[in-house]
Length: 280
Ligand code: AMP
Image (cartoon, rainbow, N blue to C red; front, side, top):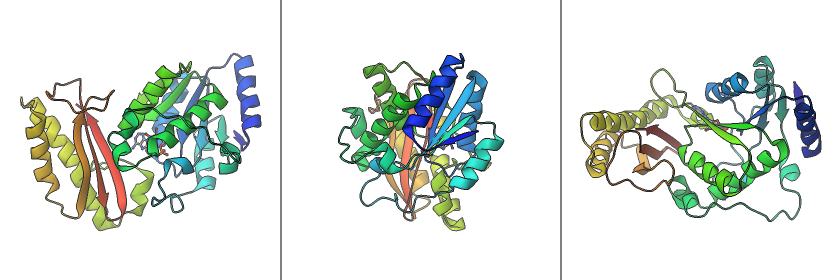
């Protein structure tokens, strides 16, 4: 496994793969790897000749009061995990490598970036779009793999790839959950046992919407009200948003139809912001 820290080395390694006729799959991550990340690696291995993983806690996607400094980091363990998984290349740049002095060019996906998490985290999706554009530029992969877990991110990146005509296919992999339904997240390590139990209400509320929809309820107001009653069972969980949206535009849907909507939630459990969603 190649372990590279500079853009120049990574660029050259990818060029060698292309010359050898290999297709490349890219899995961008912020590290603190779990089975969700590894599911993306396996999906990439299933459809590409070579797989690269980037590990970069991207400062530009964190707000000034967010958890950039404390974000879980476990680089050595992550590299061992990726080597055992058979990954070909791991890219672990420094912030100075990705944002050299004076870097002031950003990618802004207008409109979409202000919805869902973008509404509560101003500038977040500008940071995400910028770093992913840079990674697509460095690796020029045939395919890039992302988790359904970050549904708004998928919408933003899909629009960016279409608008900027990146020659890459974005692949979306299903959310990996704990057996009790909690979506895997690097931030779950912040939770106490009690908070972890409280956080399960998020998935219960999402499932309730899915069940009511299958039962014939299409009114988003009624579906959301039913979910909020469930969320009220855990007063320690403070809801940021609970929305039923079009998965591409992230705009609220007025009539919820299976196959054309996404129910998404963000909430604070203690100081930890968790997100989850279900495609309906
Ligand atoms: P992160 O390291 O949190 O930025 O996530 C890197 C990638 O892994 C993103 O595409 C996420 O959507 C994806 N991911 C994170 N958690 C999960 C999960 N539980 N299931 C599937 N993919 C996930």
